Length: 181
Image 1 (cartoon, helix red, strand yellow):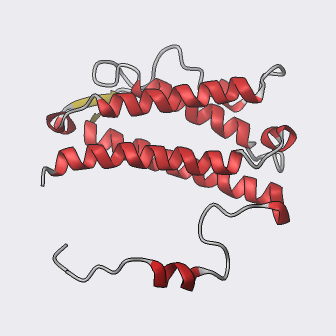
Image 2 (tube, helix red, strand yellow; image 1 turned 120 degrees about the horizontal axis):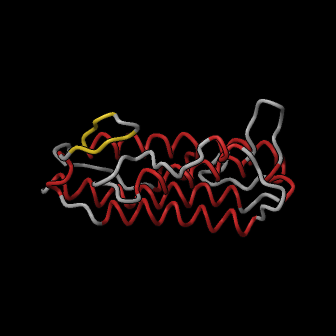
Image 3 (cartoon, one colour; image 1 turned 90 degrees about the horizontal axis):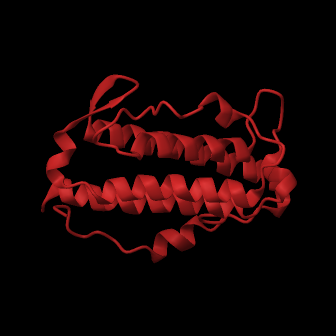
């Protein structure tokens, strides 16, 4: 098995799964809920989406050739909601961030994983930068899911195995019989 090529392929799948998970939660929210912060120190789902979109755009535009913290990024502004921001505009930025990330990963070859890139002047291997990015993404997707679940309360539709049905899913899952696999 070509492990570096397999890693890159799996990473694209993981990026898509994270996006789908977040969107499963986001799609359950009304516009009011999307933009609502649950307290003064919390971010709304919309703010988290803005931050993720800005981060992915900055980190993965010209990924191999420029610092991942672009001079035109306004990170602090990602944590503010302009008065005229709509769900559609937010979704456009969100989709663009994910497209930038996925396209950058798809353009990589196995030999690129050991190359150096920079984020805020810090030298990282491509592999380190990708691991850092997917961990950051998963962290924020988890926040989105928790916030959406909180806001929807009893109206929440589960995104995974429903409560009390684990055994149904466990017994239906294929078993790995060969420990060498």
